[in-house]
Length: 256
Image (tube, rainbow, N blue to C red):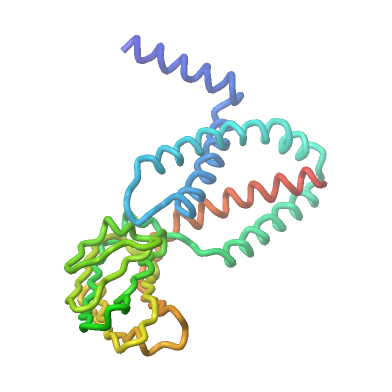
């Protein structure tokens, strides 16, 4: 019990020596975590869990906390002491307004790991073609938060990788299966064929058929949209508003 109290006292003394008091520490920690969550969910998060990206997020939170402490002490606190109440209110309202405008112009990311698994199946049969025919070229599969690595997909049929694409030769039945996290939309892209080529795509048993020859563009990009509970968007929304408001507020104080 005494050893525990000793460590608690050392931790308290360390926090006070760096941040001054607990309130300053908690506020700086909030800013650091908000930046970390915004960057992690917006840029680092994938449809599969990665310990490396989680470590990056923790590092960003730690660095952000210390940077926030520096900005609070040397920029925000001295500036607020010289500002009138009217200027403070105007700056705060302007900051919130600009933050909401930015939020409306970005893609709000959910927490993918809290979403249920989604099963995708792609089926098609390629007829026997001439010797110079390529077959079917799959360009990519995107789940709203990064491309699905081809090594994560189960293949039934012959295939080869060419310049980052997956090519299926003629005269065979092909089936692709993948299961994982999907956000608000998913995207599957095929190269247009110069022959009649039906393709069936199924998401959780809901099947839709397409024809790779029946498109005007060189590529057929198929989008599917999914319902995501609104609560999955809250962490990114709150973290983005806090981190963005803090940044804008600081910039306005420096410019002012």
